[in-house]
Amino acid sequence: MKMQSIVLACGLALAGLGGAAVAADVAGQVMIKDLYARAVPPGQPNSASFMMIKNTSDRDAALVSARSNVSQVTELHTHIMEDGMMKMRQVPRIELPAGQMVMLKPGGLHVMLIGLQQQLRPGDTVDLTLTFDDGSSTEVSAPVRKLQMKMMQGGMKHMQH
Ligand SMILES: [Cu+2]
Image (cartoon, rainbow, N blue to C red; front, side):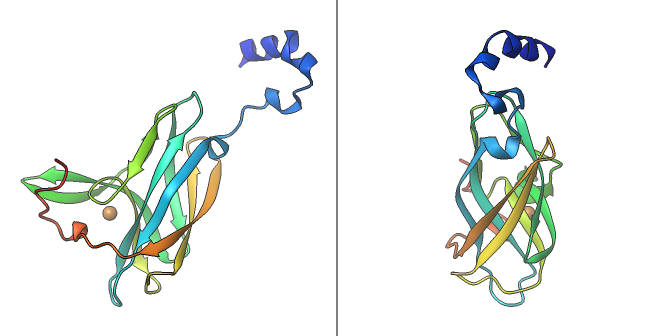
């Protein structure tokens, strides 16, 4: 940071880039695409949201938490294979390497919506707040979509190949 200040003082400051001295936060440097949440029938307690997250900056970052307006608890999850079974596991963070796109998708990383307070029907939206490792956060709306695949039922051996 000190080096950067010196560089700025020597050069860029003259260009009048007022905001340049303040590093952009992670929330301002991620692009979120193909965002959706999985529709679930009435009585289903949980669902999940999926998306592509691109870290457009040259610094590694991470998604560290999520909140939603439809579930009591919202967690970051991944799937692991254990004894030939696909299982979900909570992860403390989802790494967002510099310049790369990370896919949250059925059978892989996802934002888990636990304890749904309402039914999720196609056409509904789920408001999500995503918080990153620098404390910045972004709010997005995920359209609810029906998934044909029964990914969450377990035993999907043919996936992940
Ligand atoms: Cu999950």
